[in-house]
Length: 141
Image 1 (cartoon, rainbow, N blue to C red):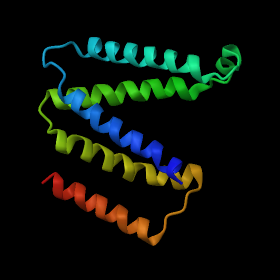
Image 2 (image 1 turned 180 degrees about the vertical axis):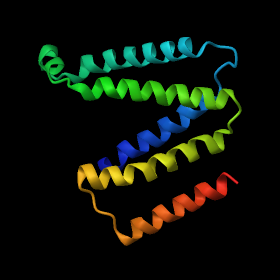
Image 3 (image 1 turned 90 degrees about the vertical axis):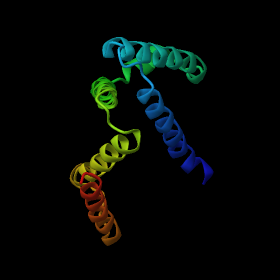
Image 4 (image 1 turned 90 degrees about the horizontal axis):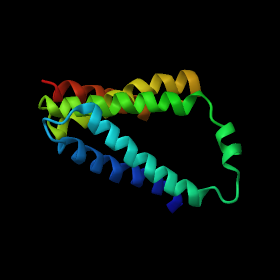
């Protein structure tokens, strides 16, 4: 049961650290250089962890499993990173930027989950959606 919550805990901790780092970027740094250093750091971490994570499997076999999704994810991450970078640069508060973005994403993902992944919406979930939308309206006033 604990292992079910560990990945979400990791995303929460990493997300908090992520936004603190984004908000701490120098105002005059070139956004592309900042992102390049970010991705080089992430790539180094991935190579290091991959070396211990293959568990005797061939790297070529793993590379053959790559489809369109990791490439599209790279494009999505680039947009996400650049969006928050620019939002903080123009003065968005750290307490609001992530909240507005994440609630909006959550509300947009619900119909995708229903249509593409056949997820069900309970009455409780429906109420949550309404509260999220109401919260967005209140926050943006």
